[in-house]
Length: 331
Image (tube, rainbow, N blue to C red; front, side, top):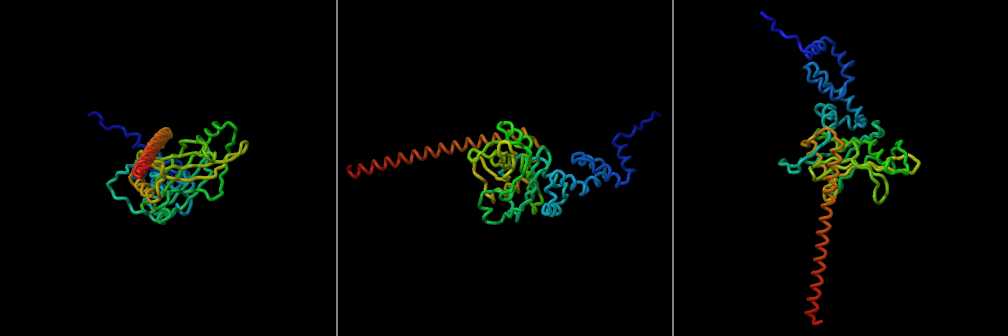
């Protein structure tokens, strides 16, 4: 009879070889050298590899190397309460939020006691600033005011190695390409997270009034309705170095209105739970930002035209009323 047995596959052979190694050797000499994508793929090889590849220390190392802010005790305490720990955080925060429908059949979740912001700024891929801030979300002043979070303290500055030159277009382009920002929002009660920054800038511009430089990062939170905007404000003089003077987060709608803290927190909660997450794509993010900006401009112009027409009608009505009064009075 012909031999019908087939040779073992390469995957089976590799699994057999791994099975002969001590788990400590696999962990210390192989798994600690893998990036997140490779580590996640290796976890599907076998039950042994799944157990080894999902160990918390491996994902903590990957997360803190990617986002140094997660070294902060506040962030570490929150992550320790989340099932899956740093592996869940990486899964939630590494991809980009794509969109979320505002027309959800689910009732809005109650506001959490607080939100945790983990902010990291990188220049040419190297971290230059990390900060964790706790936001108390149940204060009346927060709920009723526009959502606004500052990462820097008053008068705090972050130095960079970018030189201010007279060729404005050149160093604006350099800032746009070299300065990247991650802004992770952690929701302790819901045990979820989301990165609300586009990571790479969608725009670098001069502010029309202050003339300071703004580098803008944007993530769409609700399709064509609301976007989260992170603005990095830079200052300096020609010949000197650019320094970061402000890093803040706001949420705005297509009417140009800043979303309130109460509404913004509810949108963030739904985005964390139901939002679509996709691979970061700077070209797509820029297109979405431009589309949102155009929509905002169109709606502002329509609103202005409506108000202008209403004012004209009010003036005409007042004039006609005056003429009628004069007619009755016999003038």
